[in-house]
Image (cartoon, rainbow over all chains, first blue to last red; front, side, top):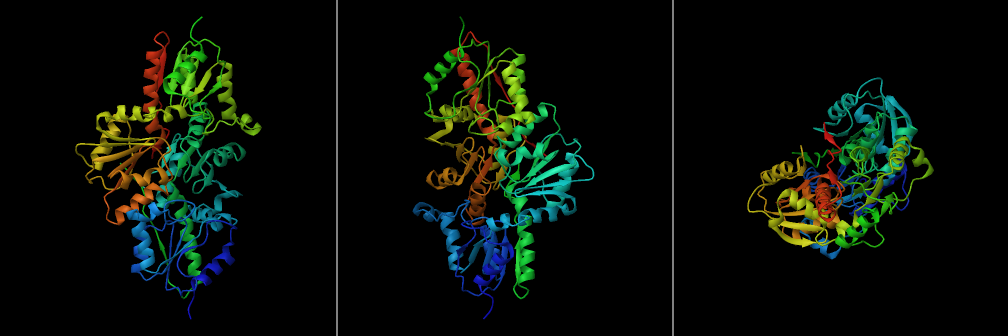
Length: 266
Length: 266
């Protein structure tokens, strides 16, 4: 008898902890089934599911949910009949895929696994000067907002970033926030409390931190903001998890599926 | 005795209605003060406030709040001491500016004033085929996603848009949603219920509607999404309101302040 899905979940829970009453659970599949291969991705897109199937994986471990919302509350009758929803569910069920959501426990680990992955991908682990539960501060030896933006784009393979501020502004102390942590309550106080020049976050409301930074600049302060995108900020963390899974289950194929940015800029 | 701030608010309430328990109220200023000039803007940025002061206006009517959040709940002691917050409040109070938030009532009017402004700016009023409370559907005679994107950029003066989909896809039926109405619950059902090729919204969570459209395309469906930006989708509605205010108060200077996009793409 080979490795079961439940054994993978148990190892995940041992290694990264379990977040009580959170999002993390087996959304589809039978926990007692044997695992033929593990597919890891930020988002369980139709393309990821199709590729996992074609490459023989039957367990998908994803950071986000299957049906385009944070809380997996089950589908209403109307949503279940909607063609995209119906086809995606049919694909999962008919191909016997198991889908495990791994979100809250990754963020609750100290340090946050998703943040660890982003720092690794950026090559900034040695520059960390402060770790808070939802933000990590780095201090770079030298640079400007523009050189940081170019570094981030090159390391993460991105065509563009969204900036509030002046690319020529000198920039050493940077605050990083992954996912949807770019809102005023989480991001704005860090500029003062941590003496930041620049914040780099995944996603947040446009009328909150970006408008704060715009006002700060108008008032003569040196502050800047780079918006990475949600996937762009969190995918490296799932790549790190895939590497860990490979180590924990050496006899089982583990493959990380990198997704293209969901947006193109036109 | 000239026009008072209260009289402006009363006229606004008569003309566009009042939304019970909503955001709309005088955030700063004395309702009984005389109005020397009215400044209208999407966001009461520091730059807008400074320009209003220098051009003699003492009443700012803005769609969004002063302090970077939707609900105006007052400032905590910590926020009040934060340099940007403190300087912005000092600017308002020392210069005797009145700031009126005009948000919910504009969206609650039928048709939504902010949507009317966007349709006017896009030149699409004659193409409207269906109006719902939070979305308006237009049917264009011909075009592709790419030609629609170019039209929108040219009409709204934007350097770029974010796209999910194929610019070459033929596109006639378009759903428009202003502001933060791009989430799954409001946007996704419209593709099927209204037979839409394309949705164009202001802002929404990246893991919701964009990922739905990505999956739909992977499943062979013809769907696309253009993301305008929050300000980009709502500013034309405030410009329309400024035109109305000019008509209601012919003896009072009314000036609309157009803001640059908060982000630049680097």
